[in-house]
Each structure stands twice: as C-alpha cells, then as structure tokens.
Image (cartoon, rainbow, N blue to C red; front, side, top):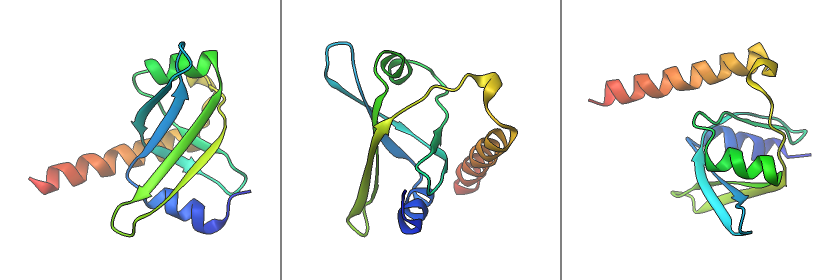
Length: 113
C-alpha cells in the first residue's frame, strides 16, 4: 500500500527517475513520465523507445522509481518488480491517460514560446 500523500506526490511530478539493473549488474537510470499510480502500488509507465530500460526489465524485473520535488527538497523512492505489459494488453483507460499527459506537455511547450 502507498499512502494517498505519496500517490499525489508522484502525480504532481513531471517525470520520475527509473533505475534498473543492466547486464553487468550495474544500475541504469532513465527519466520517464508516470501515466498512473494507485494506492495498491501499481505504477504505469510507458516506454516510448523500448531501449535499455526495456531490455533490462526483460532480463531482471527489479526496479526503483524515484521522484523529487527540488523546491521542497522532498522525494520518495519506490522499489519493487516490474511487469512488461504488451501494447495490445494496455487498457483503454491507461492509453487515454497517456494521451492526455502528452497533449498537456505539448500545449505547455507551445504556450511557453
């Protein structure tokens, strides 16, 4: 179980830092946006590139997800095991959340210039 405060904290961050273990046993980190997170501990990330993070998770499902609010000097690191969900098995709700996040980021970028 993840507390509602932690769920909200992760929702409020623009990105998270994902750590996996590479083929040599060394940490690999990557920035990813969270699509959804719930109190039961399920966190949905979409990996557009399916490169190193994807390869690492196929080999070793251990993962940590870190979010930091630099202004409040506060952060959390969640650790566990990941499950790769094939694209055709992703729910419509998760796909809609992803679309909404991408659209809002594009609008923020466009409005900023």
